[in-house]
Amino acid sequence: MPFSKKLQRMPKPGSKQTIAVDIDDVLAANAEAFIDFTNQRWGTSLTIDDYDEHWAKVWQVEYEEEKKRILEVYNSRIFANYRPFLDAVPVLKQLAKRYKLVILTSRQRLLNKDTKIWLDKHFANIFSEIHHSGIWDDWQKHSREKIKYTKSQVAAQIGADYLIDDQIKHCLAAAEAGIEALLFGDYTWNRLKKLPPRVTRVKDWQAVLEYFTRTNLHL
Image 1 (cartoon, helix red, strand yellow):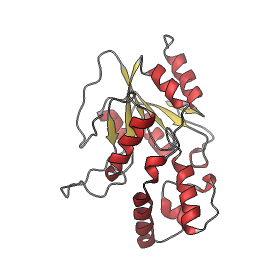
Image 2 (cartoon, helix red, strand yellow):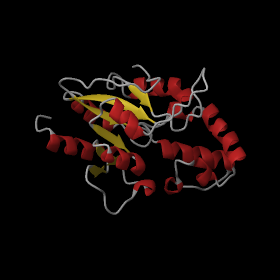
Image 3 (cartoon, rainbow, N blue to C red):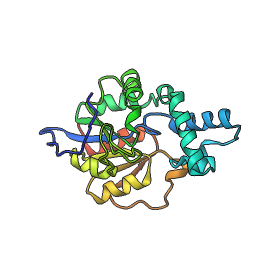
C-alpha cells in the first residue's frame, strides 16, 4: 500500500472508476477520540459537537500553546487506537468488486506508520493506495519544498471519480473539479441546508452503498 510522496499524473484504470476515501470521521472515530483525550488531559467538558478540524478553536488557545498540545496529541499515538466504523467493511468489500478504492487523507505524513498499521488492521486488502494532500504538513521531509495541495487537486491528479469526505470544503471543491462528492455523516461541522450539484450527503455507510447501488446496478 504505497504512500504518495509527490503530486504526479496517474493514469485512470481502464475498467474501474476510482473512489477516494477520507479516513478521519469517515472510516475512523477521530473527533470522538480527540475530544475524549482533550477532556482527560486538560480537564474540559467538551462533546463531539464542539469538534473542529482547527484544534486551536476547540482548545481556545493561542498558536504557541496549540503547537505544544498538537505534539502531545501526536506523541500519545491515539491515532493508532481509533475506533473503526466497522459497518464500512462490508460496503467497501462490495464496492471493491466494481471500483478501485484509495485513501485520500489530510493527515500529516509523520503519522504514516500509525495510519498504515491501523488500516492494515481494520481495512486489510481493501485500499490499493494512500495519498496525502499535505494540508497540515509544513515542509516536506528531507527538503524545504512545500507540498501542500487541496484534496480536490490530489483527487483530480490520481484520477478519482468520487470522493467520500466529511468536510464540506473538500466536497465542494471536488464537485467544482467535476468529481462526484459524497458528504459523509451528519456532524455539526458539515451541516449545510442546500448542497450543490455533484455533492450528495450520505449519513452512514449503508447510505454510501445505496448511492452506488443506484449508480451501478450491477452491485
